[in-house]
Length: 291
Length: 291
Image (cartoon, rainbow over all chains, first blue to last red; front, side, top):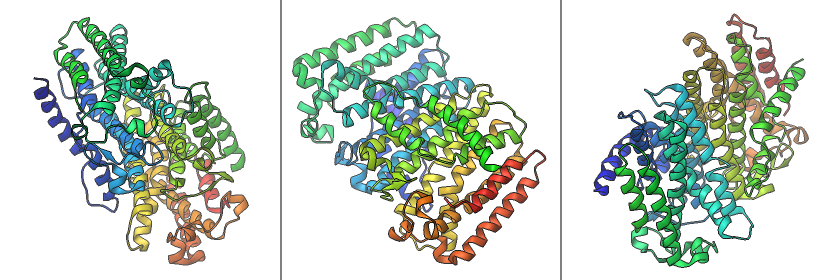
């Protein structure tokens, strides 16, 4: 059921993304190829689907938010390209294929990431059929959650920090590096639909919990996942001497923590009046996923 | 005269930038320090001043455009940080100081660039006192000129391309890598002020010519400039085996070309009804500058 729902969304999102980042003959074609290589590498499109579902939850039944949804996916993709670079996590594989810099070289990978990030805000700003004030407010929220006190801040602590890793600090890192962009997706859907403050605050709490659960499952899969399904070697955290929640709580307790966070998230969805069936399915799916 | 005008602008812009990218105690303080290191390295703030002057030219006499002006400067700064990286131009010095990655390491330099780019659009979106539709339109224009078919496209051809360099291709590179962001600055000023289509088109032509003149002077200074004033070694183009307009036309003819472009640009300014005194002074100053 959720597979079908996601597939329908994915096809529509892929068509829009294809149009927004079109192949073209030019002297700078190589960077478009490089950006498209990562953008169409088989991502699950979870973030744009969350944006669209929250947009719908607050009463909007049109396609106006698709551009914004694609913008969030472009930002997610840029972050993966830059994270894989040698000066960061130095990962050679991503989704069963060579990572961007392994395929296109470091310079093009850097510029493809910069391109996706730059173009994403242009794509978001070309959101038609929604009041300009709402669009501007959603761009502010997207930038804040993708920026220094959001996703990038998380990367900084994770990759460049020299701190003693405690459970609390890990939650701060996960909140920034993973929850923040999920918050951007859910929150922008709500902002574009004109959700009230109370609802918006619940959306943020939902996204925070979903993001934490998502990252914990990621950490577990990096330890005990199936390499073929994951499309990358397991044990990369160990290789990079990166302490994760699994080191602190163990596999079973980490899984329980993800389960509790998922239950909390479902509880928040239950408190909304509209139809949250798909949102619940996604939330549960992210807990039991094996890649 | 122009020195005083620029200085007044610089002080006001620096105050705003300081507020927008504030030092703060956090686990990710290092990336803020790194971004601020480059943002306050003594840039001339030409692009934001152009934006503000065009905003004024079309009849607006308030401070509403300052955020947007700072956003353009943040994008300019990110591009310098990423351009200096080892996988790009591999430059050790910038404005008389170690380049960002020499001071903070590659990972933080990458993330500082990503931060400035991400935050810039958030800063632009928080433009108060101007209609949301104008703000969204200006963000679209900024993204387009900073993106793939703008500044980044120019970097791609310049750094990753394997083309036979002709005079025509050089002009294409200069137009993309240098004129595009100057066009973004001038054009966003006009868009935010609600300029009509005819005027906007003249603004674009002005910016195109100013950008080309600017890049030609840069190329000349890289060959015959004063290292101390420039704050970086001359001859970096030769070191990087980068063919510039100087190799094709020679110094004198290149200087004449820059002079002609400057005259054209001044001619366009003459065709506007409002006060273009400062814009003319900046245009002339960029031709005779020695750093």
